[in-house]
Image (cartoon, rainbow, N blue to C red; front, side):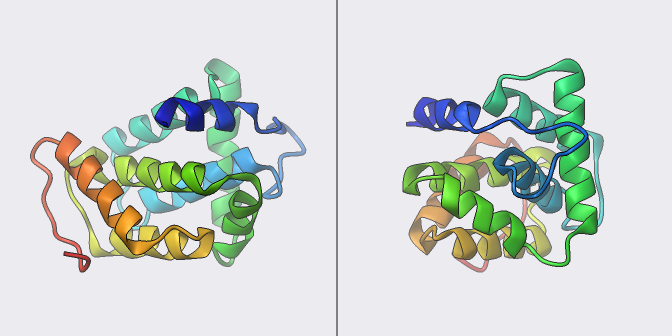
Amino acid sequence: MFERVLSFLRDLPAGVGTHASTDDPRVAASALLYHVMNADGVRQDVEWERFKAVLAESYSISGAELEALAAAGERADNEAIDLYAFTSVLKRHLDADARKAFIGLMWEIVYADGELHELEDNTVWRVAELIGVERRDRVEARRKAAAKAPGATGTSSDE
């Protein structure tokens, strides 16, 4: 299933460049992943590297194209007043399985530093609600990501 999601994400229209907008699903995804990375107010190098790795793997990009997408996501998140602009784009472009997988990618970034902060947990919860991912799927994705993160700490209100 994960390969199907990656394939679907790769097939989304590319629009990262000078005219990148939040209507571009790649920018919307990048902005949400960037947002969860910064939810706790601390951007660690390991989180930034995981953020870029997720983008590179999801969209089969590297180099300048990867840097442009990461920068577009950062810029879009910094300019946004809420998450709806991004989540509405993803909800329109991703099917149910792809939305669940996207929540899994968010959890991977959350656990990149081995810690779960309550603001990160809340951010993933809000995004999941907005894109229509049910609680049990969100919790299962969190558990899978936590199991892959050695030394992960923190608890969630979902347990």
